[in-house]
Amino acid sequence: MKVISASPSPSARGRRDSQAKREPVRAKPQQMAGAPGECIGLHRFALFTAVCTAFLIFVGGHVTSTESGLSVPDWPTTYGWNMFTFPLSKWVGGILYEHTHRIVASFVGFLTVILTVWTWLEEKRAWLRWLSAAALTAVILQGVLGGITVLFLLPAPISTLHACLAQTFFCLVIAIAVFTSPQWKSGLPLVRSRAESVSLPALCAATTAAVYVQLILGALMRHTAAGLAIPDFPLALGHIIPPFTSNKVMIHFAHRVGAVVVTTLIVWTFIRVARSYSDYSLLFRPALTMMVLVGIQLALGALTVWSAKSIIPTTAHVLTGALLLSTSFLLALRAYAMLTVKLANCRGAL
Image (cartoon, rainbow, N blue to C red; front, side):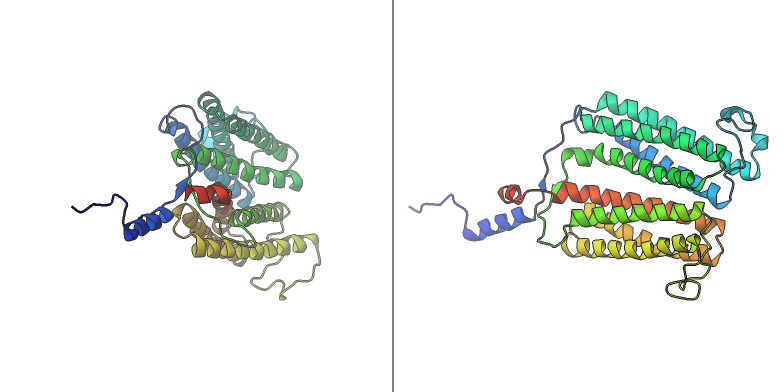
């Protein structure tokens, strides 16, 4: 009588081993209130708040592009009226742009209050509750800075800080949306990190920091009227490196140098992801999106100069910069979650 062995054949074991190596390991689910599907409403509301924030940045950029910042010279009232009772018949010209900016900002502030309260009621993760409180603090401070900007007749330092805080607030809301997503709660797939001189999480963090600094330079350039200090492109006053005859020329050229640095880091990040992590859509898609956005951003920057700061490309340039920052920030969050894992744990899981 033949004895049938219960142990699998070497070929079967090999197939199972190779299949196990291909299957991603998932991080342990985060501790949260209830089942993964119970807080989907909070995640969707955070996404909605993020979309509204992006629209607010666009509207704010349009105010600057049309030089409408002082079309409504008082604050928090609008020509003596309560902001929410200002007659529609008076929403004309620059008043339309500035007052719309205030209304949208108030709406985003209201959404942030709801988001913060909802997070504190639903979330068990204390750090996430405090993150929502930080977002609420940021949006309140942003409103105050907006008022100071008007009352003190658009001082460049305050206006620049106002623009930069808007980007910070945007990232905070993006983070809340990411951390409340079912995908994040159930655990992102863990990826074995490659032996590289600069890890992908560190590279993504550096890229995000560079984009943020570039947005600071862009805001400073806009609010110091340095946008056309160098009126030609790709040359700068007819040179590769222009004569630094004024502070405005220096600020403008620093922004162009920043564009080169940001583009280099984004291309480097994309190549790294495409070569080593292309099978992971959570990493590849935002990396590819960054490549598309930086191409659009460079084209818009050139059009802004060539068109002598025409309203449409100038405002679109502001919005695209914010989208580029948020995409880079998203990729950095995912890279740290998926790749910052002790190799010993990975070996044990694989």
